[in-house]
Amino acid sequence: MRNAIIILFCILCLTLGYGFYLRYFTEDTLTGDRFLGLTILAVAFILMPMFLYHRWKDRNVKDYMLDEDNIRKMRDFNESKESRKNSENQ
Image (cartoon, rainbow, N blue to C red; front, top):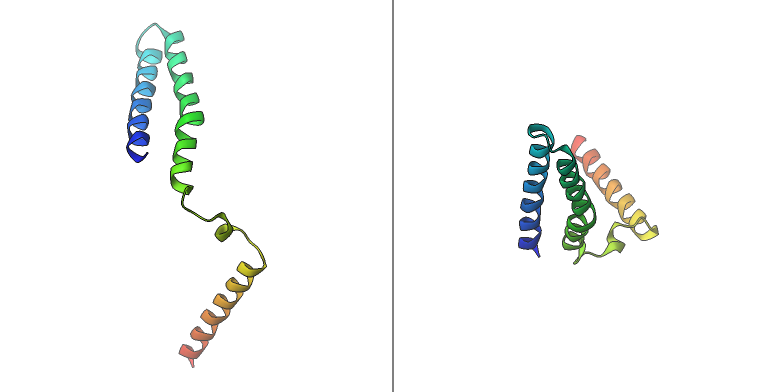
């Protein structure tokens, strides 16, 4: 999956560059605009979902949700940090 994402990213960068080349250095602005538009669509609807799935596939979403248990853990952690800081200052 990682290699496919990297290869797709490189291909889309090349097509983006080619679209800018056609747009600004040749007279064929319509084709350049089409290359740019299709590249942006591919990034938004193909590359980004692949990347997000790859990065989040083994994670537990509950670890990132703010519920009562996580709020209690954060308070305990902050209180222990403050108590250590106060004991060091005395």
